[in-house]
Structure formats: C-alpha cells, structure tokens
Amino acid sequence: MPVKELHSGIYELDIDDRKILATKNMIPGTSVYGERLISDDGIEYRQWDPCRSKLGAMVLRNFDIPLDADSTVLYLGAASGTTVSHISDILMDGLIYAVEFSPRTMRDLIQLCDQRPNIIPILADANKPQSYAHIVEKVDMIFQDVAQPNQAEIAAINSKYFLEEHGHLMLSIKSRSIDTVASPKKIFKEEVRKLESGFDIEFEVLERKELDPFHEDHLGLVAQIFVDEED
Amino acid sequence: MLRSGGSELTITEFTAWFGKLKLDSQGEVQDCDLFDGNPEKLAELVVELQENSQAVPLKRTDLRDAAIECSFVELDEDYDVLLREVCIRAAKSQISRTDSDDSRIIQAVEALDDIDKNVNELSERLFEWYGRYFPELEMTGEELAGFVSAYGSRTNIPEGHELFEKASKSMGAELSFADEELLRAFANNICSLYDTRRYIENYINNSMGSVAPNLCEIAGASLGARLMSMAGSLEKLAAFPSSTVQVIGANRALFKHLRSKAPSPKHGIIFNNPVIKNAPWWQRGKLSRALASKISLAARTDFYSGELDQSIKDSLDKKLESIRQANPNPPKKKPHGKGGKRKSGGKNRSKKSGGKR
Figure 1: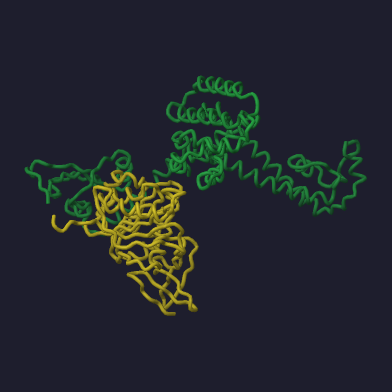
Figure 2: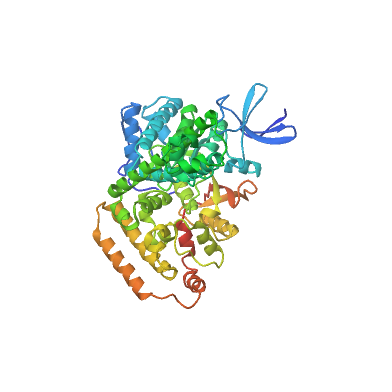
C-alpha cells in the first residue's frame, strides 16, 4: 500500500485508489472515536476524518502544518478529543495542553488522557488564560477551535500568554458562531482584520482558506505574531 | 526593547503549579519556594489556583525551564509525567464537583421528555398488537397497558366484569398462551414506565420548589425546569435577557424572522404556561412579554438570593390583569402584519441571535 508523508507525522494512504488521511496510532489496537484502523508493514494507522476535524480539513486544503514530533501545543476547545488524539499521534516527543470548558466533554477527554502520555487536560475557560497560566508553559503552536463569538480575542489573549515568539497560531473561525445571519465572507474579513491590528498583540496571517467542503462556513487560518523588524 | 531602570528592584512574584517564583525584570528566577511534590496535594493547589489566579503573562520565563532550574524536577520527562498526573487529578476532581441541583433537575426533565416520546410509541404498538385479540376494547395508553397486564387474554375477564359481555362476543382472534405471556410482559414494562414518569414528575415538582422557588412560582415547576434545561443551567437562564426567555424553544421561527421578513415569534416554550395558552390570541404577545420579563426576574432572584419573593408574583398578576383589561376585544387589523412590522427592527438582530444557543 503506497504511503505518503504529507507533513511530519501526517500520512496519506492509498487504499484501492482511495486516498485516506491518517496518523500513526500511538496506542496500536485502540480506536478513539470509532475511526478505522489500517495496518501496513507492521505499522498501524488511524484514519483521520477531515469532516470531523478542522485540522484534518486544513491538511487536505494544503495548509502548511507547523507541527513536528517534538512540538508543544496548546489546544483550545479540545472537546472530546477527536483532533487532539491525532495531534497526540503526531507529537511523538511533544506535549499537548488541551483546554476544554465543558465538564461533560471533559469526561471523554480524560479517558483519552489516561491512555496517552502526551496530553495534559485542563478544565478551564479559554477566555481566561490567567486561570491556567500557572500550568501552561510557552508553546510552539496554539490551535484554536472554540466556536465563540469572540474567537479572535481569545486567540490574541492566549497568544500573549503562551505563544513563543516565533510560534504559530492555527485558528478555525466559525462564522456562524459570530453572527448567524451575516455573510461569512464579511465576517472572515473582519476577523482577519482584528487579528492583524485589532488587539495589543498583532499577527501576520500566513495562510487563510475556507474549509469547505469539509466544514461549512469555516475559515482556516495560520498566523504568527508580527514582529516589527525596526524595533 | 524596553528595559526598566532599577532591574534589581522590580521583582515580580508568580505562582506556578510547582511553587512560588520570584522573577527579576529579565525573567530570571531569583528565588523559588517549591511546593511539596505529592501529586494529590499539587492537584488541589492547581484547582485552587485556577479559581483565584490573576497571573499576568510571563514575558521571558518559561515554566518548564524554571522548574528545572529550581530543581523541582531533574529532566524534561519528569516534568511531563508529573504535570500530567497532577492535571488529570485536578480535572477529575473538578468534574466530580460539577453535579449541582439545577443539573439534576435538567437531567430529570430531559428524562421525562425521553420517556414521553418512548412510552407513546410503545403504547401505540401495544394498541395495535393487542387490538388483534380484543378490538372492541376502547382503551389506550396507560389504561390499556394496565388492563393487559392485569388480565392478559380477554377470556380471563371474570363474569360480572363490565367488559365481560364485550369480551365474550369479541371478533378478536384467539390469544395463545405464549403470546399472552409476551403481551403481558410488554404491557408490564409500559406500566412501569408510566410509574417512573410520575415519580420523576414528583421529583421535579419537589426539587424545583427548593432549587428555584421563584421560577417555580412564576412559570410552574415543569416549565421552569424546561427553561433551565434549554438554557443549560439556572445561571445561564438568569443571564438571558427576557426577550430571549420569551422565545426560547421557538428557534425555527426566530431564525426565520432574523433571516427573512417573517414576523417574530411571540412565544417559545413559555406558551405552555396557562396564562398564555388560555389567553385569546390578540393578548398572547403582550402577556408572554410580561411573563417572560418576570420569569427572568424570578430566575435571577433564584440564582443570586435563592429566597422566595412574593412581590414578583404580585406585580406579574397586576400586569397581566392590566393587559387583559386594556385589550378586551380583538384588533381589527390582521395581527401578523402589525406584529411583524413593529418587532423586526434591524438594530437588535445580532444581539438576539447572539443570546441564543
């Protein structure tokens, strides 16, 4: 079976001419959310469904994914850990701080954390990074998928607390959670503007693409903290 | 880069999960007061810090480096292992503390809805099934289930029973012993579901009185519980504007209104309150606005003080009465056009939709 490594730790398997996105299963034999397990050459892969994961969709939309085997990631809006489990596969020697606000979904997430050594669960509100500033170190990447009306603000304030100087911010912006009626294009433009100049921390947007057909009315975005060269 | 003048003097304190740090303006650790390395104790501390922490962003200090520098742990891996254990413990203890009075009621009211849905389906099945053997029996629902579970086949109805006549002349098919047992067991289950339903209903009525006395008084126990369930919690319900309370449960109509020129919904699930249900149509909008505003007030009083405030009910009654007296007759114009125009002002559109889940 042909296997192509798209990015560090992210694979594209070719099964009967169907391309399947996958990561290497860190805990062989276990499927986290009912996804398919595929063995090849003694290596077990877990299928990664882009329709259930914004990051998966971003991979297929050809984003440059700033993740390495030893990255440290802050994941805001971890939910029950679908995407987190795949990042956990990618980060063989890294660490994920998974922040989730709802105790109900945290219950599922903790089951995952019990199995995997590289996930640190934090039950907290991403609006209040001060409430987990005593736990989280500086990270290489912040991934955010929170579906809140103030998504850009949450990204900015968390970056201020936790993002390394040259670290990346990956953001999935859901227009529906900002305004259900307004046109998504307009909202995306406004959110990007906010990130570029709306806060006391400024970002340089490196890449932005909409995530359809995998997720409707979502914008994927990769940014870095803007550093003024002259300063 | 900015550099403050007396670097020696500007020491900032920062409490990390492993200890209290004193940092100079360069972000270098000057002093550290380490906590006990016992994961259980650390987890308690982490939870406490999460609730009270006002930490500011650390510009130049990395927690991991600081922990190793202070020799709290020796290696990177030790840091990961310990932090992971502490955080899992902390999150578990936070989860176990999330069970609250209102969340119990919400579970109960949702269970009630599930039972209703299922018990209806099962009762219909029993009606169809048992109807083959005794079609003349004019019973449905709980009555039918009780009958089947008590008698089984119609041949078991004793002489002198009011249905004896009907049973002996029935055109229904004969019921074999095996089928009878099966039907009885099925009916038994339906009966016990009805029992459970009553049990849950009582539970909601009783606990609403103590958890949200005002809400219970204004909206009624079951409506109050439903409102809490749709809002997510009593706290969230208390935070909603009363315009949102008014239309909770009318999502489709509301979004239709926001997207197109459809008239705004007058009431969501608060329609189930007899005040509105029994009112003539031209008063319903006004009454539901008044009721919603008092429900909001009641929810807030419940969440923040928890004591019954009779004045809410009194002022609601007064308001309702004045609405009824001011609008005794139906208006001449079509109600739709009027209501639609008045309420579809563009200004608070986004606000309204923002308040909804």
